[in-house]
Length: 114
Image (tube, rainbow, N blue to C red; front, top):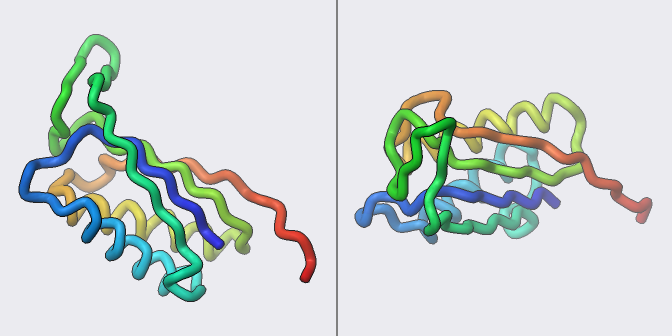
């Protein structure tokens, strides 16, 4: 079960965050693959601001201060790579970000035998 945590500045008012999360879950499920209901995603808005060096902002720019995404999953390396690529692509398209402006970390998790 992939768990995705997104920390990001507030997006443009026209962005429907719930719709973005649904699209992201569907895309990750197809990439991994797994059932869509096995993908969980949370969104935390960074309302207090976000600084990169001395550049502090409060609203999401398109080319800097990318969303920080933590992904927890237990999959082979090729599936992890596909999941990360899909996360970057969906968030960039849905949030109107420049390509490469999504920061993704991956944490492997232990899956007990069933």
